[in-house]
Amino acid sequence: MNIFVTGGAGFIGANYIFYMLREHPEYRIVCLDKLTYAGNLSTLEPIIQNPNFRFEKIDICDREAVCGLFEEEKPDIVVNFAAESHVDRSIEDPEVFLRTNILGTQVLMDACRKYGIQRFHQVSTDEVYGDLPLDKPDLFFTEKTPLHASSPYSASKASADMLVQAYHRTYGLPATISRCSNNYGPYQFPEKLIPLMIANALADKPLPVYGDGLNVRDWLYVEDHCRAIDLIIHNGRVGEVYNVGGHNEMSNISIVKLICSELGKPETLIKYVTDRKGHDRRYAIDPDKIHSELGWLPETKFADGIKETVRWYLNNKEWWETIVSGEYKNYYEKMYGNK
Ligand code: TDX
Image (tube, rainbow, N blue to C red; front, top):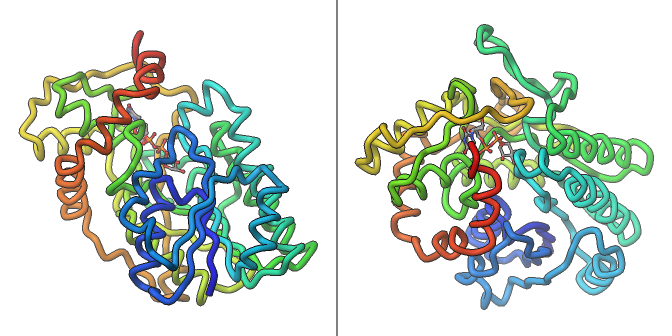
């Protein structure tokens, strides 16, 4: 089996490659990554010499380069993680989100049609459903919930999902889609809530909580997401969408307080700042379909996963300190400087 993993130098993609090489040592994994600010080749260092692994620096929008690699490798499965994924960046500058997330997906699917494929899997997000109110805790996103994106990021992911479904219906592309809740774990870029708060707390810097801090996210340990995708590409039904989430809803402020306590830092570091524009209130996934059809259940409890994640950031300071001190510094100043 030859699997193309796009965006494999990013957070979830890299964790997925580690997972697949461990669980299926006989598979060949080819990683295509543009190496944007969020992609880090050093993340793949532990497996770069693995004879069953190949890395290619490729932008998924580059049709010629993508087709060249398909021609050479003839992949059986493509798993598309490649995406611009940070909501705050999409609010500042939407264009690259539309380009990579929508047109890049189209280029990949065109190559799949041209060269033939067993499965194209699109890694999507619960954000395509919009948000839920805080006062109706019995409401969850199911696969039938209408798409109702709030940010340019989520609109680009919703567009890509619709394009995938259109390619399935129109051309018979054997496609599946997964829509997962918020992930956390090793190698997450420190612009996202959990690693940002860990990095700031360790440096005794303010912990910027947007709005009232009561927005709710449904957190899943990244490895549980990787296992869900593995199940879907092997046993999921073509043309179907699978929601992935762990029924682990938490408010942002409770997560930040937990991180303070794990690191032995005072809550006085918490600083309430201007809210994100169009900030989604609550995400909550109903994972019943993937559980009943494919037997998937999350294995890592949040209490264990967050401890493991904090330990990883403590033990791998050089990985994220390089990021925090580089180009990202300008982004941080721009986004948080006057908040
Ligand atoms: O500094 C911050 N302060 C803060 O209060 C940051 C970075 C975030 N937040 C809040 C905003 C959100 O309510 O924390 C919550 C989580 O924020 P993010 O980590 O930016 O994630 P979110 O906006 O929920 O989107 C994430 O989940 C769905 C991923 O970034 C997406 O790529 C994924 O599709």
